[in-house]
Length: 168
Image 1: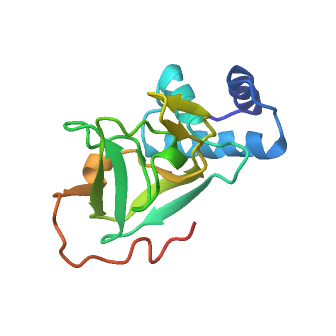
Image 2: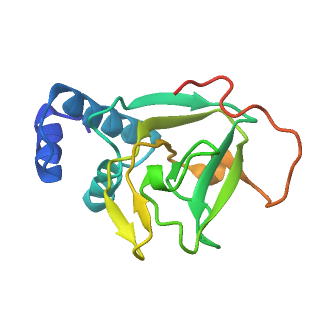
Image 3: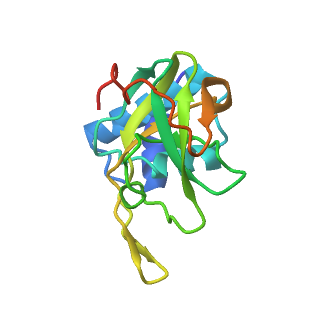
């Protein structure tokens, strides 16, 4: 299915963001990436993905290579998800409530296309203590279980430098 300007504009309208040229371009980049990776997510999932991305900052496709290391804040049993980040990125800059979660590390096992973006701003407070703001680097992966291996906690084996070949 071709991605039309009308569809992009409708999504921007539903998101209630200003239809600035960069926002429209970024929504198109997200849609094109998702379309190439497999079936397009349902509207609700698509909107959730778009709401997690700062559409006012550059969104681009990138490629991760075997040996690159990613991380994700996750509850036990929910290690794999859609969004990942660079090790060292704070949960606050990702807009993630860290309660009940740990930082899981993953090693890329095959060349993997990703969508690189910044986490959308979220000004919120959980339990009266943790303030989250967004702005952290994040990577959207379409099929993480096929591209990543979970690095067991405490595994200190030598690994490639984080994102030595990709920029951000």
